[in-house]
Image 1 (tube, rainbow, N blue to C red):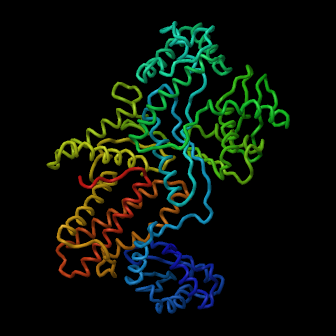
Image 2 (image 1 turned 120 degrees about the vertical axis):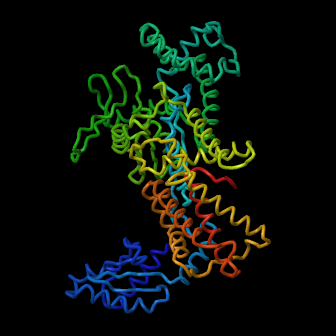
Image 3 (image 1 turned 90 degrees about the vertical axis):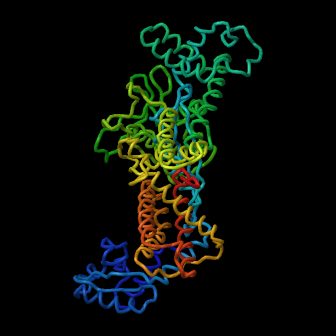
Length: 588
């Protein structure tokens, strides 16, 4: 369906042209004075100079034509030359009826769908997810869902940290604890066991213990570096251990991400990019892109327009070891070969911006990607505690994601049990849904690049700009619809009629904006715009609800219209929260 703003603009443009003025002056916007009008056009002011005519006279010419248009209830020229517009209730009702009949609720699928790989998540294997992994997962998942809703092919890749010294440390620590394991027998030529020699709990304890020990024991660290080297050069036993680490870690990561309602299409890691590095390095050398600087292999990526220094992109260290830049570039090679994406979008901590400037410029300069392949970096801010510092446990450590989810769910369970007589098992399930809305909405309602304060008390409130408030609004609508059906009336065939009160029209106007909000939020990679929209929508619905006796309305046609309006409001709200990555219970 065409956006309502575009339909209005078409009519205003036609009026400008018929009145003898250029169409470029006919730009229409949402009113910045909703107390005066719903939409406005300020083009008469700009046209005044071109036509040497008072803007109010130009506005008057245009309004004379618009006043005859059935789309508008009111069109007025206001000094010094504003054109104020109010939509006809009949036109608006017709637009919403068509919106309700549309399977995508008026949102048009992309005319030219893109294949977009979205790199988000980025956890290290053998380590538990902590609150530092939250933003990437939540923001990335919502962008992926937005893109899919608009018809793009979105491929989510977790991009695991599964390479480097951490693997060597785990291998050495495992050898120290269980030296008789077959993986450490250099004469062994048989098949390795299918079952891992450790649980996820043991694995999560092994790495920090090894890391801490290596800081005070240089010989231990040297042994870990040697183990890393052997692993990366094909040591059979160590490769088998890596496989166990991956299997055990990924199973645990999937479980934790599922608790966040986050899923990935690809579970690739840095190790998957390693086979592409030798050929890539050779290509960069042969084509004169890379050169040696103090033993390291680098590519210059600075540009004349730079206002700050952009260092060369290091491809290999002086000892021949690869770095994150190497792995990220090799991952781009792999993605281009396997998927030929139109865009690769990275959702990463904004402190990594310089790294990605170097990687993107190097990929372009060395022609690892074509000119038509877009590389995008969405840097997010930090999630802070009430003290304004990165969120931590009371003991000062980094909080595990599992612990955060548990504490939020417990808080929501307590609130639900305090406020309602409800079955405890149902309350537990409801608490999970509402708790997830508290976390996700609390994060996504902030602009991604901004730091924000994670305030459990505020985020779990049923009042104000919160996830639970949005869900409470949806549940309120569901409750009214349920009672309507209990009274023996059907939801089938109800139709939205022209509004006869202001709060009803305000709700209809807000619903009509849905397609433009969704499209704009994806274009600007801005999930917070969807949050802002559903908060406004929830507020105008609740105003309408408090002013309208829906279930006791005696006029059955009017009541059916109210019910149809509620159905559309519910569908739009549920569509938005699904895109944001959470869902609503049937009751709270």
